[in-house]
Length: 287
Image 1 (tube, rainbow, N blue to C red):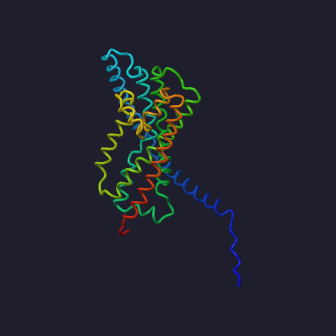
Image 2 (cartoon, helix red, strand yellow):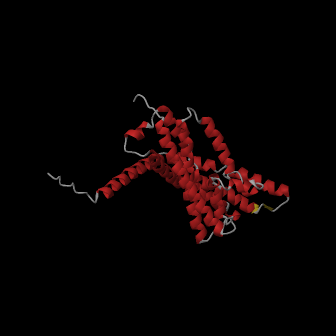
Image 3 (cartoon, helix red, strand yellow):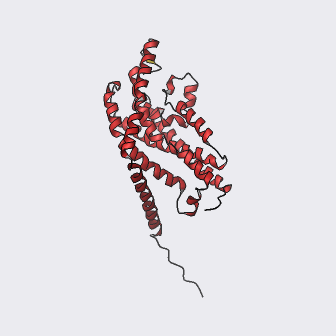
């Protein structure tokens, strides 16, 4: 007897996608509520985080006065201060404090098995969680940053045009992806190393320098400046700030955004590859 073929439900895939979206939206809402529980603490920490800018402004003012020059590698004093202010915005998107350490800790303590026995993709879950935290952080720190930029408005010579604004926002969103997947890749090292604290310290210290957080990469002599601009680190601090200031324009601007996208995709693929490779040698006991 011929078996009657089972009818294929056309709406099965959209329904599955809908359930998946609802699941991660629920995770996003919970993470947002959790982060906003301590609003006053976040606002205070954000305000205190801005205090070192006063020291930075005084330091670079002394550098320019002591050198007797009004411009250093294309940066005037006002542009330098504006750059250092904008770097804080770049790092607001790209920095992922605790992400790599938490991934490595979950691997070491066996907590990563919760992602293996539940219908959750670890990287997607962590990204949704971080997006919620970033939104909460931006909302709670908006007032302190707004006050700071108003007080320092004399350091900004012009307001960017619409094209520059679009490119700047894109660079910040891509900076989030680059920063997230870079930290995730570092955390995946926990599959091979029992303790990654020292590695994280070294990587974060180097990242602070090579990303342009301390000063624009343009101040470095050739070939170091061009070499560091080939790496993904510049997109975590230097590149968005340079875009806003108009230091990157025309073909260089769109080429930079394209390369930032390539790095984001490449790091995402690397993070997933390391995760699947790590699972082959991962063992969890108890619980």
